[in-house]
Structure formats: structure tokens, C-alpha cells
Amino acid sequence: MPFADVNGIKMHYEVLGDGYSLILHHGYGANMHIWMGQIKALSEHFKVITLDSRSSGKTERPKEAYTLDTLVDDLKGLMDALGIQEAHLMGQSMGGWIIQNFVLKYPDKANKLVLLGTNHKGAGIHLLEQTMGELYELRKTAPEEAFRRYAKLMHHRRFFKEMQADPKKKFHDLWSAEDLIKETMEDQMTPEDLALLANAIDAHDLADRLHKISNPILLICASNDKMSPKLVMEEMDSAFPNSKLEFVDKTGHHLFLEEAPTVNNLIINFLKS
Image 1 (cartoon, helix red, strand yellow):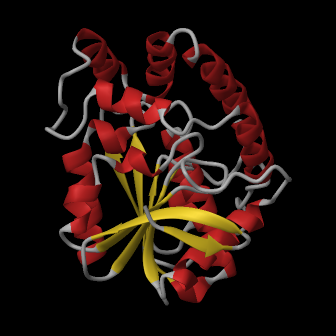
Image 2 (cartoon, helix red, strand yellow; image 1 turned 60 degrees about the horizontal axis):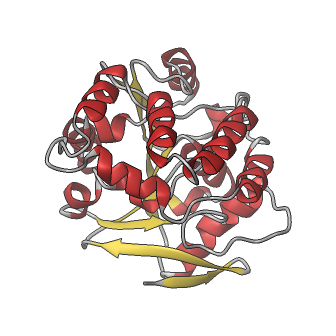
Image 3 (tube, helix red, strand yellow; image 1 turned 90 degrees about the vertical axis):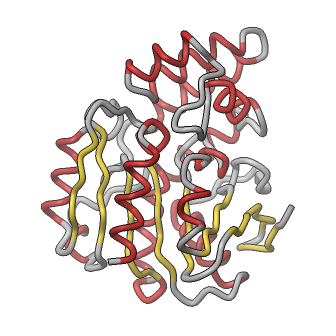
């Protein structure tokens, strides 16, 4: 289990595949295992690096407050520790927030960007913090009910119903509801972890600075995303100088799981073009 000494903490990461580096940054409340629909396909073309962010997964969880800039420097520190001078960067939701801020601070470290279900402001993160904190407590007594509530928030109703009907069903031969339940139960963020991370990332607000990010960008938008609506991602697409927006129908916030093959093809084609 690899760890790197990064910015004052031990950061958990994994590397799979060969070729040009592609770093995947997960969203709020998740960890590296959320990329279970991407790892195999992407690692056939790139050296894929996944990580657990500060306060998440198996990475060290500090007790003192930190900032959004700390999270940006964590990503830079991991690249330095692995000897990566430049990489493609991919982030979902909060991961996209961190990557946007990273590129503005370290423009020479980033090549192409892939941003899934993300936005340009940290608005609403404390509502999600409250929800995730409630789910943490509920998992102690009713883990299946906790997952039902989580899945209803993250997934399109079509996938939600199919997962409820058969938790063992493998979607795209990649993941099942049982796999997601395991992912949400292992290495859970505590309410204290959730608060520290939310307090750091609520500073994200780049509405007036998106035009300064000139990297080639692929934006992938879900049709029924409750947290990163299509309108917001269209605003981002209009503001970025060099972006392209792809819309995936009948999907929710975790569209990268729901329609993994479609999303993976969009990513591979964009990064290799």
C-alpha cells in the first residue's frame, strides 16, 4: 500500500499502467475507489495515478484546519514525490474544484484537463457536509438505508431502481450496488473530517478567473445532476477559452459509474487526440 510524504502528511496513492501520467482526483466524501469504472480502461492507455485526498480514505487525517490552497499543494507535492513534471488531470465534483485552482497556481504542471460533474463555486458544500454527516451516523445502525439515501442523491433514478431491485447486478461488468456499499463503508470520513474538508473547499470561487485557464478542457455533464446542473457547466464551457462540453443523457452526479464505457471513451479520445 503506497504512501508518499506530501505537504506534511502521508498521502495514500496507487499507480496502474504505463505511458503519460493521468492523475484522478475524487469528489467530496469519496476516495480513490470511486474510480472503479475507470481504472481498467484508462490504465490501458496511460499511467493512472489515483489518490485519497487529505481527510479521506487512507490518507492521513489532520485535526487542525487547512485551506483550499493546502489541497492544491497536496496535489503538487504528490507529483513531486512521484517525479511527475507534467500530467493530464481529471477531477469529479470537488476534484474538479481543486484541479481548477491547481492549474491557476501551477500552470506548467498541467496538460489537458477532464472535469466531470463539477462547478466554479463551492456553494452548497455545507449542505452536503450535513447530509454526509447524517449518513455516517446512520451507517452505524442501518447501512443499507444509508446507502439508499446516498444513492438517491448521487444516481439517476433509473440506476437507483435497478440497484434496489438487484444489489448484485454488475453494471457494464464493472460495478454493482454491493461494490458501492463496500466503497462507502470502508475508511469513512468522520463528521470532523467532513467539516475540515468542507471548510477548506467552500472558498472555491473562480467565476471571474476561468478565462485564465487556457488548457484544453473536456467537460462531462450529466443530464440529472442535482449538484452540478447542466446550466452551470454550460457557463463554465462559455468562460473557458479552450473547452468542449459533452452531455450524457439519463445520468446523475456519478455519471462516470452509470455510463462508464461512454465516459471512458470520451476521456480516452479527448486525451489522445
